Amino acid sequence: MTQFSYKNDELFAEAVSLSSIAETVGTPCYVYSRQEIESNWLAYDQALSAHDHLVCYAVKANSNIAVINLLARLGSGFDIVSIGELERVIRAGGDPAKIVFAGVAKREDEMRRALEVGIRCFNVESEQELERLDQVAGDMNLKAPVSIRVNPDVDAGTHPYISTGLKENKFGIAMDQARAVYQRAAKMKNIEIIGVGCHIGSQLTDMTPFVDALKRILNLADQLESDGISLQQIDIGGGLGIRYEDETPPTHQEYADAILPLLADRNLTLLIEPGKSIVGNAGVLLTKVEYLKSNDVKSFAIVDAAMNDLMRPSLYDAWQEIQPVSITNAEDQNYDVVGPVCETGDFLGRNRQLTVQPDDLLVVRSAGAYGFTMSSTYNSRPRIAEVMVDGDQTHLIRRRETIDELMTGESLLPPGK
Ligand SMILES: *Cc1c(COP(=O)(O)O)cnc(C)c1O
Image 1 (cartoon, protein in one colour):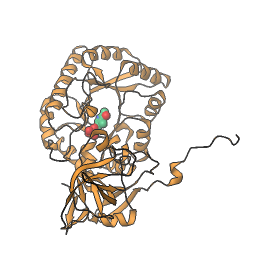
Image 2: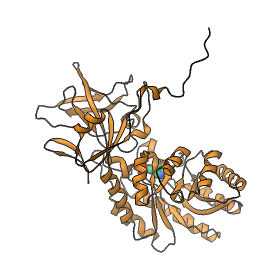
Image 3: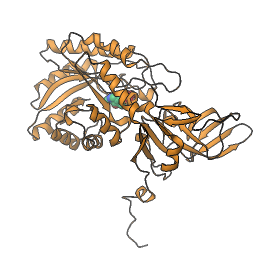
């Protein structure tokens, strides 16, 4: 259930009006709903309750430590892809024993730190990574817990940039090589095989690819069993889609109903790594109209947020709903909603029917995932604030970056000619 709704033609996040947030925090900023984030996580946890499982939130979707901390309080595990995400989870109170570490290019120092804090497992994506991990763990006199990420060669049917489970993608180990890699891993002194996993892509709106991938992986698990390698966990990645426009992704229950029967008589802990479906619709980007401008073919609503703040529309040509914070009865008009960045690709939405005046507030919906985390300071625009609403309370969870911070760490050459 969305926590962003209109009361008397004014848009609210839970019990707080977005115009009051604009007044106190300024624009642009991201606004998240605590209740919506928590209920999305709990919906997975409850739907899967019939089977031993762990919901590992994919930190890259939204890595603010307040978000991580709320999920840690619920008992969440975490899917991380870098040492930066690892340190965030630890500082936010996450349990290292519930962390799974993915990514195709793990460095030695990242492995060492992850071993030191005792993460649950490394999702290994290549044979060379396995060799490096064996060595690093050996140097530390430890055994590294490993789950191999296989590439099931399943088409997730989503945008090419967010499809990850095809042979032509860089992720995982090809299915036809996986058995041999497991046999090698089983002989490594400092590797402990605990599982198998995959992640086939983002924004999946159909269960079929998940089920196909799971069947292929279970088939591999059976082969491994006959090789004398038994697994304790299976990780089916993240990727359940959300509604941006008119998509109808499976519900948490439909997801569980499709997956759990395949695991029913198996002694395998199920891990899932949802990101977008936990935080995506639990956040909006709040922005203000600076100017309106028209010529004989186009009208532009020029706002104070840009592609550097929210990259998805430019990067994936993604459609996200744009709504006014205050509804008026004036006649609407067709606009391209664009930002201040010097790129034609800098738009938040094109061909939108809106009633707007300069200084009006707009929100871009479904911005809680891959919004702030993908933002940059391109055009020397300081990164924007993030706010968490909790009932009638508003918490600033990241203050707006300052101009000084924008140049932190930079320096001039020594004086001279
Ligand atoms: C990005 C990613 C996820 C999360 O995907 P969502 O579409 O946000 O659910 C999970 N696992 C891995 C390995 C990922 O790279």
